[in-house]
Image (cartoon, rainbow, N blue to C red):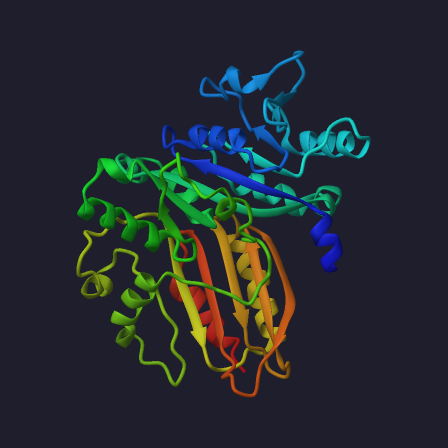
Length: 359
């Protein structure tokens, strides 16, 4: 896709998070802020905590409502795809204008199906650009919610940005403990405490989380814990990493958190050896068929044999895409880095399979 068409597409942010974590508070703040952007909000189930009427100027019972600062709000009880088609048609006809879309999911929703919508339907994929998933976690109740609700772990696993609300209600140790747990579930999403009165709107609305780019940032805390138990794997010349999954071989890496055996977790694979492209494609295709429902997000920068540029790939569940990236520079040491986030993924199977794809 060329840069111009990417620029013309309507960016979409998926806002998700635990019940009571403050999604609606943040949304109200975004909508009442004078940022000069017209934002269409899709509430993906209109519940009791919908946007307050004082923010809305309702002139009819329509699904689409104008907001006092020129934003529009679209409430969707039904099908997201239908709403997106309807909104693009009305935008094209000049019926109403918006610059970007925010989809607010319910507190219990898994953002996966919402994200997949943007890959499954060609018209939607051509018109809208999925920018990122922002997940809000409540500092006070976050640990308990993660313990009780696997959906909340999925929300964290899917995130491109994690905001921690109510930071002022917990002490430093409890915050660090929660933060460590969030990193283990999702090492690729920056985590920041957020005071909703002062949230940096720009940092939430232009994330490019679904762009295939050459950056694969992993939280340093995750990497440090990883390195601490690297000596478990005596492999020849390439280092791959497993993330802890509560089993005994990991305990020595765990110096400052009590481990929570979350079903959603992450692990990295890295290697300085090139992949055989055909074998890798076959292996990843098989993995996605078998484990797709349990794979939340996966992303990588790949070193392929016979190709002098990096290959960028990412996926959501069973939707996987790849495209060539920048040429490896003479000063660079080509290498592969991949991160997989999912539900009880069999790390050994993935790791051994990927190793067998190395040339």
